[in-house]
Each structure stands twice: as C-alpha cells, then as structure tokens.
Image 1 (cartoon, rainbow, N blue to C red):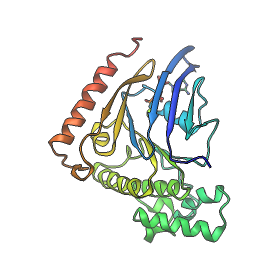
Image 2 (cartoon, rainbow, N blue to C red):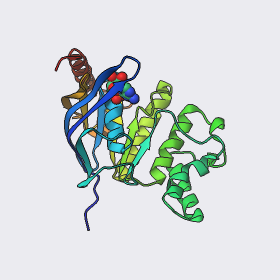
Image 3 (cartoon, rainbow, N blue to C red):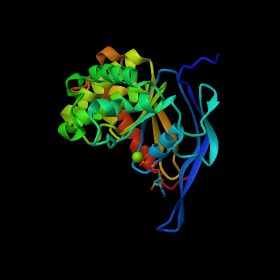
Image 4 (cartoon, rainbow, N blue to C red):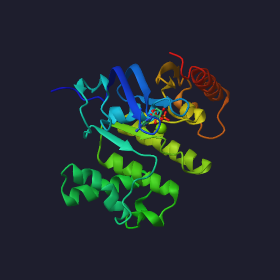
Length: 264
Ligand SMILES: Nc1ncnc2c1ncn2[C@@H]1O[C@H](COP(=O)(O)OP(=O)(O)O)[C@@H](O)[C@H]1O
Ligand SMILES: [Mg+2]
C-alpha cells in the first residue's frame, strides 16, 4: 500500500484569471515549485494579491491550475478530496445546526454512521476546548469559539492535510494567541501537514517550520524563511529576541517581494 504521510509536491503551477471588470488578464501564479514535507507546518505569506489564496485553493482542488501539478503522496490532485481539509477565514458554520452537528458534518459527508460521527465530533470539540458547547448554535458563540468549532470540524473529518486561509484574521489579538497555541498542540499530536496562509509575520514566526514568501504579479516564490526557533522557546505573545528576529526577517522579505510587483 502507498504510504500516506501528507507530502505535497507542487510542480510548475501557474494560473491566470481574467478580470471581467477591467477586461485584463491577472497572472496570479507563475511557475511555482514547492516541496511541503510530511507533517510540516508551512506558512504562506506575502502582500495582498500575491496569490496565497489561489495557491491554497489549487492544493485544495477548489481551483484547477492552468499549468503544472499538485500531488499529495504522489497522487495528482484533480479536485477536492478527503485527504485535504480546508478551514476558511469566515467560519462557514451552518447557523441552523448545533455546534456538534456542524462538527459531525465532515464525517457525515465521508459516510460515517451517526453514532460514530457524533463520538468523533465530541472528541474534537473536547480537543479544542468546546466540550461544553456541543448543543449551542453558532450565533451563541464568540468569534474565537466559532473559529475553534471550524477547526474541530476539519479535524473530525481527519484529513492528512489541513489547509487554512487566514483563519484567525477576524478575531481579536488575545483570542488569536490562544487559538494559535491550540492549533500548534493539535498539529503536534495529530501528525498532520498544515499549510497556513497569513499576512501576519508574528503569526508565521510563532507557527511555521518554514514560511514561503510570495511576490505579487505574477505570484511566485520569493524566498523561504526557516522558523529556526525551537518550539518550546516560541511564544504566541511576548516573543523572545530569536523569534522576533524571524518575524523581522519575514517583514523585510515581504517588503522586498512587494517591490517586485509587476516585475518579471
Ligand atoms: N476570481 C478572480 N478573478 C479575477 N482575478 C482574481 C480572482 N481571484 C483572485 N484574483 C487576482 O489574482 C491575484 C491573486 O489573488 P489571491 O490569490 O486572492 O491573493 P492573496 O490571497 O495573496 O491576496 C490578485 O491580483 C487578485 O486580484
Ligand atoms: Mg487571500
């Protein structure tokens, strides 16, 4: 049997959108080559418009790349699949379902029976600290709690790869730090590969094994910055000097990449 480890191989990926309003072509991604390691926590960073969401959607199979291929453990992505789970920036919880039923939706779509999927959902809610809110509705939760429920839902579907597009951008700074710490814990004990889009250099410096900095128009890999700081020494708030240095390097690279906007 093929070993499933969550290795993502991106080769020659390019994508052009047609901007209907301005009647022009937008080169969103150009010749992207990237090897994402099994169980890696990889961040995608860069100025707005550099193609982060497009690349994530191509990995998810929600957008079909015009050129090149993405493979997960050697299998070419041709559409969405159970090996990959997406957490969107907007929580995308169904307002008419309880938190438990929202979280159980992933396993339900995968054909898991009712008792088992409720059990899986309870496990994941417990993991993200929402055990007491299983019977609440999304509108009864705070923004941070809704985002945790969205993470739990993706976890309950048990994908090999978690794809996250600025999932914590809409929550306040204090809540965000807690969510980041939780995510790292969940990632460490689940052994999943995570691809996480952010425009926050502090977030990337805390979360990432490596951060890919993209340059805009066309979207391309500008550089890759190593997370460097050992995990136990990292802090979601009040980062030490080594972590702050990684964040500063990221900021520098994002600015340098932005200066390449429109330059091929
Ligand atoms: N559906 C679309 N139609 C036309 N242009 C798009 C569309 N989606 C994205 N773009 C353009 O492609 C480029 C990359 O967008 P996106 O992947 O959303 O970047 P990011 O997530 O880094 O902000 C931007 O210039 C954006 O305006
Ligand atoms: Mg985006």
